[in-house]
Length: 413
Image (cartoon, rainbow, N blue to C red; front, side, top):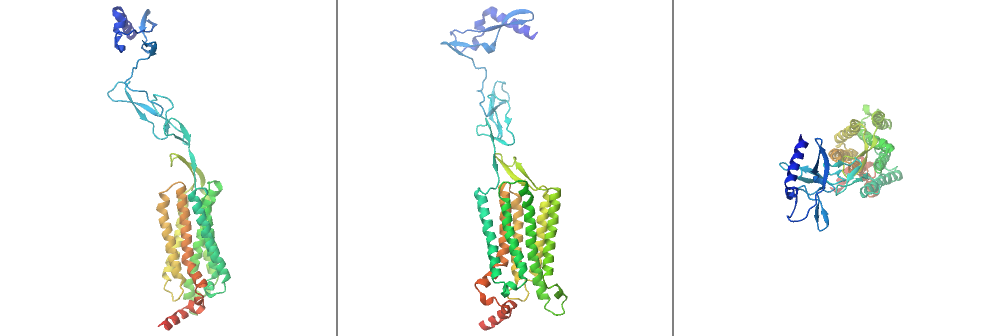
């Protein structure tokens, strides 16, 4: 019935004057227009109906299609959106969001790019995202790698100095073998930060955090062993003291071994259950693919750091309690300062690590490794190097035991 009414309506119009009836489609009256019709069967009757899509305007031999919408077409990178209270032919063009495109005009919806692609500025094409990681070619990576090598050379140089002056009292004091172990551990701490630089792969992701945790546990175990020996050395001066049986290399080696072994067991459990693996993070940055190591188990990672913190706090408390022992060169004081620096660095590391992503998260961890290693090195060994190289008059047994120190005070008075 709908088509029949249309046919009857148009038939009535045609009977009156078709050209005048369609004058509303014209721009100016008096011009000559040609209308194209097509034949349709309507209710089993043949009639000539006007095909609106084929209405054309002839003016100066140019054929122009009249505009039947009140809005211009939406170009590439835009989508159509209806306006409230307006006809459907009236719409607005809204630019596609970041990561979306339109590749044809008058698109109703924007197409989302794949995760490894991004939209260009005009939002009409998807482009391949670039890859980001902390590389040696990156200025930040090159600077951290240079610092790591320089910091590794410092304990190496001190180890050479201690080897040359190994018979002097200040090197022999408080178990020089532990000092050698600690210097080697500091070299390894600095060098293990190089594993974090470069494109992550399966091997580097497996050994990054575990190597860092084991080496630092060994390092802090050496500091804890030195603290034990400082306390025992002064408490065992009494011939009847029960601590005299602990004097010797057995106790510090046992402390170092137990501290390191516990961390090794924790890391092995981590690797066997939820091992770290490389991943491509496409969500963090809209323009780049971040290649990073997924820790596998966040709980295991923080347990490893928590164990290091436990050892550090134990060393700090013991050294703090022994800081007033009667000695002109009380190493417990320097251990206290070194542990204070170490704990402060890693407490500051936690919020910085959690608030960053990508290569900057790796850079924060490398910086924490290098700064804490430098803190241990400077607080424990630089005062000894100062005496060895510049104040040889203090490198005597009398001065270290406090006798030379008190005699110098009397002389000055």
